[in-house]
Length: 422
Image 1 (tube, rainbow, N blue to C red):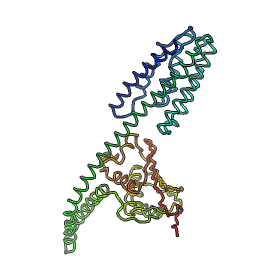
Image 2: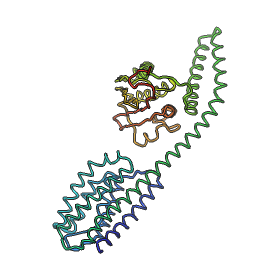
Image 3: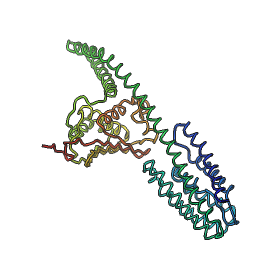
Image 4: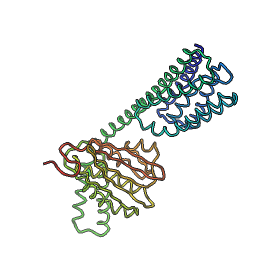
């Protein structure tokens, strides 16, 4: 079982090195490493595999080099680069039949990993593990066949066990470890965000109620003063005071909406008509920024919720989209209807956002407006959507634009095409 012993030794070294890498990622609290760092570590792993490979003849090197290539290709998107590195390192040991067999295999694998990487990350975690395992088995079978052709005189049992058991076992262990770390980081981020939101909810509710009472009294006295004959300057100052008090009340209202996101007054919301009203309110702002509002409305029907909060949510999001295009442009609002969900898409062609900014959207006091925003608008929007059992997904690219996708469940008893049940 000489081949199997070498393979297990290869696997032990790979798992040991990856363990420290995953530990570092866990402490870092993010599954994000630079490609340069990933390539360097992958080269080290590939070189270790070659150094401790089993070669019964000068033409054949038996090892687990496919493991770092698969992991790097599927999880980090550097598969093609690693395949060329494998070919290069193998070439250093001689340009013989083994080298050409290796080159053909890894050139095909480079194309496969390049094409499969985006699709791989769109799959759920469990399916990603299965995909990794299946690819590992396929590569093992191809390697098994090519080695058998080049060098027929091998211990068949040792040969089969080494290639059909050890690599799939290794890829499964590594994939499950990576997915576990990813899941732990995701859960920890959710817990931290939930803790922040809970603190803001409690603080917002307490402070808002305490401030709203004296604010209401101040507004009342300002209105009384405006009723008496005043000089032009006094009237101007009172108008400024009244406007600022209204602004302060809107901020407090945002706090209260976030602190108490539940729907208090259940209403039937005609999605298309309400969006038209929102756009009519925002048309002056769009004109100010030279933004054209384009609508593509389908008769999507009704939702159950609170009309005022629905308005508040989409006023915030569409206004942000307009302000993201300071040089002007187009903002598209599209509605779509399915059997179970109503979808609202809001697309701008503005400055865009990074992946880190998207992940932080909806957090308390986080704004992408560089000091010009409070962060309350998106926080409230996310809170309102949650209270209506909806979901938000965001796609964005820097310098290209951002798309918000809102998905709301259609209540039972309402048609999706805009008609009520009799």
